[in-house]
Length: 122
Length: 217
Ligand SMILES: C[S@@+](CC[C@H](N)C(=O)[O-])C[C@H]1O[C@@H](n2cnc3c(N)ncnc32)[C@H](O)[C@@H]1O
Image (cartoon, rainbow over all chains, first blue to last red; front, side, top):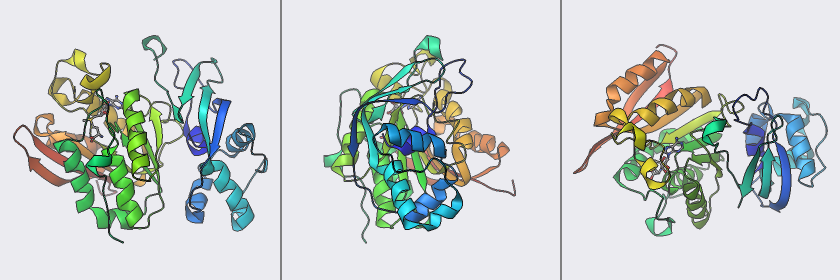
C-alpha cells in the first residue's frame, strides 16, 4: 500500500465521525521505484492532505517532507522528487491501519489493506 | 507503441475467484474500442470496483501505458482472494494498481470524492435470490439479487460520488438488468450515456455502457 492510498482511506466503522487519517502500524516497509511524473504530482497536490502524508512518511522512516507545503513549492524539482518518493515509492507491506476513534485495526498483508467490516460494525 | 491487453496465460487464478469470462472480454473490448478517447482523456486516477482476477484493470493499465498516459490505478474487491489474485496478475504484466479488500469503495468514499477520472465495473449482475448477494466466495462474483440490480444500484451512487468532473464510468450490464432504465436513473444525476458495445453470447446479452457528466442534462 502506497501512502497515496493511505491518504485516501478513512475508517469506515459505524458511528465514527472523523476516521481520518488512519494511524499506521509498521511491520515492514518496502521501497519500489516508480517513474517520476511531475504533472501527476502537481495534479495530486491539491487533493493530498499534506500533514497526513508528512506524518505517515515519517512513520515509514522517511523524514524529508516539510511539515507544511504550498503550491509555490511545486516549482522546485527537489520538492517534487521528495513528494514523489513519499506518495508513490514507500509501501506499507505488512502492518495495520488503525481507526483514530475506535482503535479498530485494519490489517495490511502483502501490501493490501483489508477494510472489510463485520456485520455489527457496518 | 503497439498496445497490449492482459494475456490469459499470465492471469492468476484461485478456486474462489471469478475467471475472465465473456463479460470480462466484452468490457476490455469496449475499452479497446474507446482507446483513442481514453488516451486523449489523460486520466490521472483510474479505479476498478470488483476486480476479480485482475484481467480488466491490468488491461486498462496496459492500454493507457501504451498511450503514454501516466495514470495511477486502484482496485477493490469484496473477496480477499480476488485482490490477491489481481496483484499476481498485475505483477505478471509488470503494471501496478493499489488494491483494497472492501465493499465497493467503503473507506474511500470520504477522501476520494470527485477524484476518479475513469472507473470500470463488471458487477455481479445475474438475477438471483436476494440472500445470495454478498455471500462469501465465488457466489458473490455473479449474484445480483432481484433483476441482477442489487449491487449495481449500490455502486451507481458511489460512482457518482467518486467520479471527477470529467470522470467516465464503463459498466457491464445484462439485458435483464434493464440497461435503459439504468441510463435514465443516471440521467437524473446528470449523466449522459452510450452503449459502447453490445454482445450476445449463447447465455446472455451484454451491454457495456459508458457514462459521463453532461452539463446539458
Ligand atoms: C462478474 S465478477 C468480475 C470480475 C472481473 N472484474 C472480471 O471482469 O473478470 C464481479 C466481481 O465483483 C466482486 N464483488 C461482488 N460484490 C462486490 C462488492 N460489494 N464490492 C466489491 N466487489 C464486489 C466479486 O467478488 C467479483 O470479483
